[in-house]
Image 1 (tube, rainbow, N blue to C red):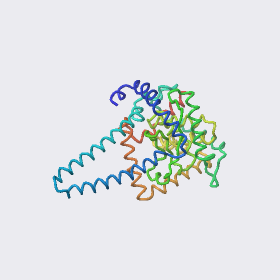
Image 2: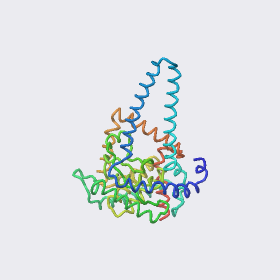
Image 3: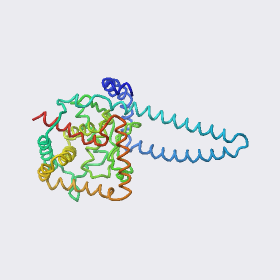
Image 4: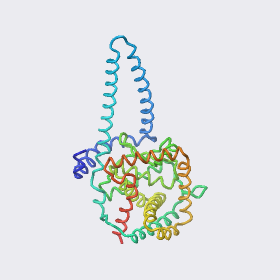
Length: 356
């Protein structure tokens, strides 16, 4: 890790486009045939196995004190063996994580391969971006044909079918941006998605099985964006703002109206949240232009998350999850932590202003 932290060229061309691709693509190809998340089942098996091992360890440790010769020495040796086994397992997991995820945090910034440069922006420029995204959100919503009985957007087909559309979207955008290099892998639904929502997580990338896992219990208009976000991680882009921006590009350039809408709507939420913090009056001005149909999806999402946030359990789990995720991102070089998700706005602005 010390080598790539100070050398983005090595992280980009030796690891992200070299070792990572060589190791991940074959595994992602194989995992793509599984309609379920193998990582999820491995996690449950690991938890159960860990509990069993702890129980067995404690029982054997207690038995050590009932032997006649040197019980303390025997118990100490048994404890040291246990520590050794845990350390060995941890070292293997850390090595796999580093090869399949960790080094990719230090590759070149995605903007290096774009036709723009991120700079400081004014509030007026941010407002212009929000107006653009609001109009695109309204327009793309009119093209969506998959509407539920409550008037909200639904997936146009099964999860597996839509994950194929996400793969197509990533494949298409990879033709323009060689560094993305999507080849194989599909988004997978989480079996326990409902319970996953307590953590306020909508997707997670598994570096151990090369799987893009998605919470499919959430309002469906945002699922296409989440699929592409997680597939961006699978392509080696680990920084959250970059995965968000790549997901946006994949969605708005997709041939699917549902993906177009998901990309513009999600981008609008990020940009308008930023405008809300910087100029409330301008925020209200642009927010009033959002169509009633779009608001049906936004209100459905607000109501969905309130179910979890308003419970004591949901609030506690959400805070712990956010703290863990924040620490994880900071440990991997993202100093802004969970705030890095919102830094997609800097990339959106740079893109938007470069085309004016």
